[in-house]
Image 1 (spheres, rainbow, N blue to C red):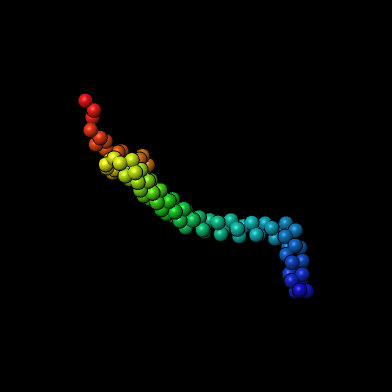
Image 2 (spheres, rainbow, N blue to C red):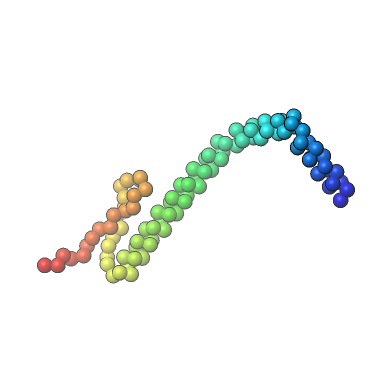
Length: 96
């Protein structure tokens, strides 16, 4: 308990010292620069995983709705990879 109070008192004193704060800021900046490429790569990978899961879920929902409504609409794959939804092929017979 006494050791804890001493450690926290020392940290408070160091935090109020402008020179210590300046050094801590430099260390934090260096750490951020070192970690940035890895963070950006992980962010891109996470974004791609979310996009893939979203597309898969959307296709499943469309397929479920088509089956529920009793239509045999086939989900056509999208030739574009710009995020647009695949087009449904209309196979419902035309009324005379």
